[in-house]
Amino acid sequence: MAVISWGRPKIEIVKWAAGATSCPSTGWATVPNPKEDSTELVPTKGDKKEAYGEGGEIIDVKYKRSKYELTFELYVKKGESQPIPEADIDDGVVNDIYGIRITPEDTTLEGIFMPKCSVSVDTLYTAADGKRLAYTFSGIRPAANQNTVQPYTAT
Image (tube, rainbow, N blue to C red; front, side, top):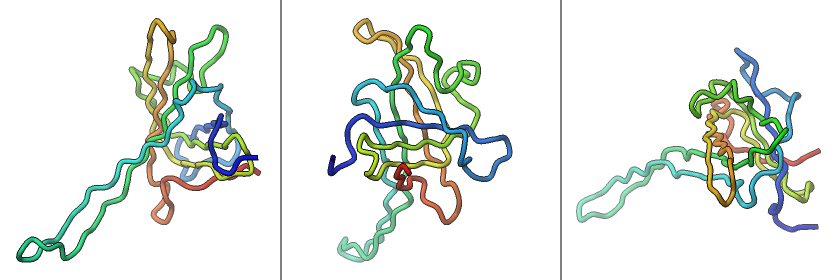
């Protein structure tokens, strides 16, 4: 049993129905095993605004909200379909809204849930690794009173 939520994650995604106002609770699809060490939640700190007084002393500091992107890479394997169909991808752009959740290897530990995301999928290739797809889920604030990234524990 682990103490921290590391290791091989279980990644699940769900496509929002057209006109939906919240993330579906059913219809989650498990993503194939990602490339090793490619699954990552990348925060971008919100802009910082500082108020200065005479002499350069800081009187107050205010931050804008942070932005979040969850990324991973999948190998393109013979006979295996991708979690987002190629027909739904237009030069890297996916026009649909998706939810994504990450369950740690130890399922009793807390993972990550991003209920509303814009998605991009880019094609990569190296002779060492072959063809891969790089998925980027950019978090969108789901509602005025909800955080973009939320805790998730599998039930």
